[in-house]
Image 1 (cartoon, rainbow, N blue to C red):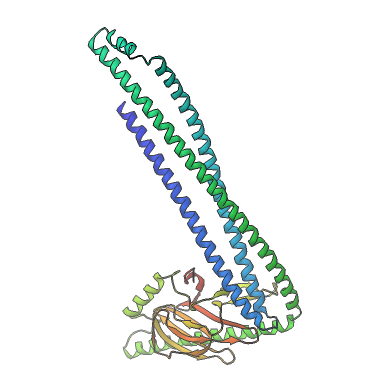
Image 2: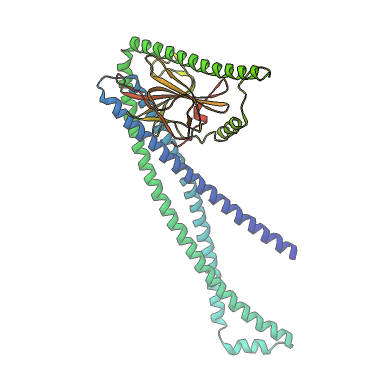
Length: 412
């Protein structure tokens, strides 16, 4: 008997913990969705601001199409997030309806049982009858048990009344919560409808800009070739810096009568910095205070000419005019190079890792300078023809290119 009771209470405890876990998971999901919504809305607002800057120049540009595409992508993700919230609320509303149904059935049963007890009590309310029932016992033990029965019965009635009150209270709370959730759902449905209208408008704008830009295809192809040439020159310049660093390490090895290293050898201090950089993957601050990634890493189709692929060794971050670039981590400036027709670039070494900041107008550091995280190191070029301010940013590990988005903090 004791074992079965113990098992019963253990089961109740497990169920309570499971319910708590489910509630916690629901809250976490809701919080995550709300944070994602805020992040996406911020991205849309930033894109709108940059799009307004681009539109100041009356001439249509590819940058406008890129910004509109970025906004459409964020808007679609925002609608999907709202759908997720609505789905969660629908599940909670269904659960609430089931709970209300169960509580209503419990209340009916409790009230029925209580009514029977009241009726029985009414029929046997004569104190003399109760007394005679006790005195009619065959012995003292039976008399004691009958007295105990009346006491327990009275206590049971009180508990039943309390259960009815508690059930009513729980029922009222569930009904209130249900009304609240339905209100939240209606607000979300309104928000969803609003975002869908915005999306339709943005897609219409995209079609218009896309159509007008197609008339400039030959010019855009020339611009693309120019961009590819600049990217190749930047690649070669970065490679020269890396080779120069390796040559320096090899000369130092020869002078110390050591074997030539095939790759950069790190000092204990540099190794520590490298390990620290690696441990901050996904947490590095952005190289600009405010901006959006307008072109991602790797190979992807051209926004206007899908039959032409673009290969990006880093990411392009569009920001507002007059913006500065900043170091994403502690390190040492290893190169400041002027690229004719494409501004300047800075290469900062963080142990085994390198970060490159390209398309700069002015540079505030020189080779050999030690820089700190978030230290401003240069100003970004403003392209008057396209009305855009764009930073090209790369991350390398040794001689391997990495996707900078994997390293940067997700909410800039």
